[in-house]
Image 1 (cartoon, rainbow, N blue to C red):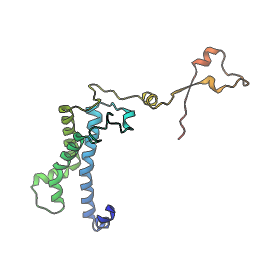
Image 2: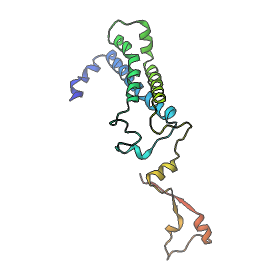
Image 3: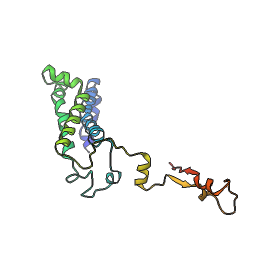
Image 4: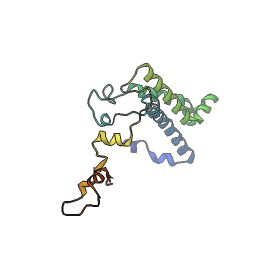
Length: 183
């Protein structure tokens, strides 16, 4: 209903309107990207809790207060605000030339401002599971957390009535066959 109410066919009335729409869209996306990059690379230093990504328990890492991170929303709004005046100029209002220059770089300005504000807010009011050094989990650690087995004993593929391809029992146990994941 909302998509119909915004009259999307007016966006294609002229190439200028469509370009203005895409620029406005970049204002909002840059702020989201800035918060996400700052959280992963600078605040949590590559660490994420895979189990807590998929839970709504009140004490989980990403639940915050009622499921809302005020750090992220404040940084998101800050990233948008730096570009709002320039956006007003793009739709026809008279604005200072400095605001137009900032708006010409709207993705970079929104990204940098939102990433910086998020980092500072998380520094002043720490969030759960932050790290002081880089700690991105390996694929093996992720599979272990999710309960997948990374290796299968090669002996489990031999039945008693078929001859074994191994010379001795030691070689049989040292051989590891990687698990194939069906897609």
